[in-house]
Image 1 (spheres, rainbow, N blue to C red):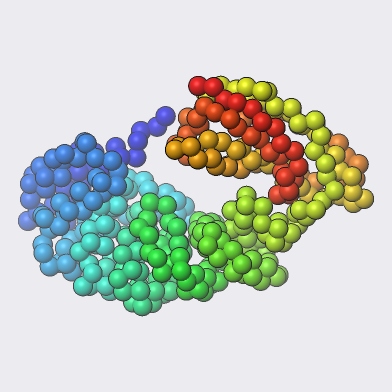
Image 2: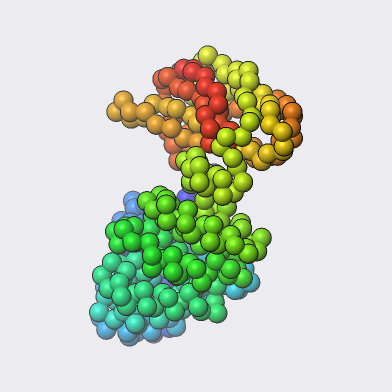
Amino acid sequence: MGEPFKEKLNAQAVAAMADAIREAWPAFDAAGFQRDATTGLQDLELMDRVRHLAATLAAWLPSDFPHAVGILLRAMGPPADPAAPEASTRDAGGLSGFAMMAVTRFVAEQGGAHVDVAFDAFHAMTGRFSAEFDVRPFLAADPQRAWARLSAFARDPDPHVRRLASEGTRPFLPWGMRVPALVADPEPGLALLAGLKDDPSEYVRRSVANHLNDVARTHRARVCEVAPQWLVGATPERQKVVRHALRGLLRAADPGALRLLGFDPDVAVRVLDLAVPAAARLGARMPFTFTVVHEGESGSPVILDYVLERPLARGKRGEKVFRIAQRNLAPGQRVDYATHHDFKAVTTRTDRPGDYGLTLRVNGRRAARASFTVAG
């Protein structure tokens, strides 16, 4: 397992921040900043470290916000190469890499009365580390001005800046503060995405797909209107954007999304001989086998997946979908599958002992089910 992300903001990183700021502003009390910034730092998780360092910057930089931002801009390292935009998380000297999370948080927390200065700073900073989390307080507090700036960002020559426009306005940005208006009304975001769906940068297009996937969580019908419009005359790159954007609806077995991508929920495919052990153990691999037979008269694309029904905390139950395969089946074709499910500790789910169910799906249609128990 790699180093935890929080260790990207450790005492060594604080020292590098102090050196970079002092070089840009010789009056900076680097020793005082380091002392306050490292006090209690080791006990904090990543986002708490970000908040702590942002507050420490506010204590040791000039109280005049434009002056403070000017210092931070001079202290920054070089931007990532636009040809390799995802390299923006690297540490490249000066203020760069994860340290920029604290810098952009400082801008968000201190810049409410200076919206244009703050967005000018985000424009420059996002090429060192994405400022996606820190435009969101402005979307909540001053949406008209924030949307105006982000709409301009969507037309910027720099892919980092264009991506910020899409990523920062996602309704359900992971780790980002919730902005209820982004969830309630997706239209400003959809208008922005329309101009980015054919972006030359895959880095930007992937953000567009993730944004549209977010919208589908609460506005399924609207996304099912937008997606076919985007597919008219679509390039292969735009087709990929739409497929990735609809992945949540495919997991939810939405028939409209399935049919739009060519997967007929009523396809004439049967599942035979599902075999699942009666018992499994946490931490172990559980094998299972089954057979699919295509009984239709023409070839059909199919998505095979399974739904794991499992116990949750406080006596509740839930379901999670896992992909097995996507393939084309010829008329009369029979395919045997031998696969497995791993009951292991991962950050995205916690398996518990108890009664489980495994249901196979063909293009979202539930086709066969087996029950089993899992012991600790």
